[in-house]
Length: 127
Image (cartoon, helix red, strand yellow):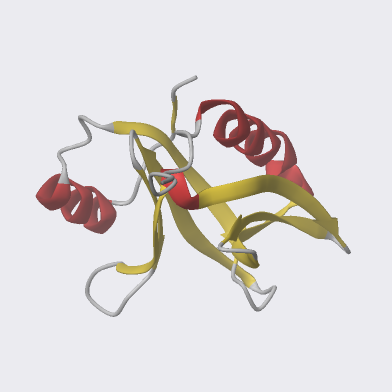
């Protein structure tokens, strides 16, 4: 796919400290907060993890860190005035990010990508 959008310098530094972008497949900017107000959050998908960062006082903080193998049912769900990217983990829905209609196409592509390319779930061996 790769979908790599430009990032603010503090997030560049935070990601550089963790993986140097070498494993990043998706980096996308959401333009609403979970409360529905205008603001930025950043979704990062690596080859094995899904991360969401939110702005912090001096640097972004990691708000969501999920293994891709545990993600089920990724979907871009429409809301009034925008939408949300959601996944299910262990049977529980998790809202990852919210975004305005202007970002709808990007996050719909991300949901499709996650559905097609997530690793198979790890099941314990059967006896």
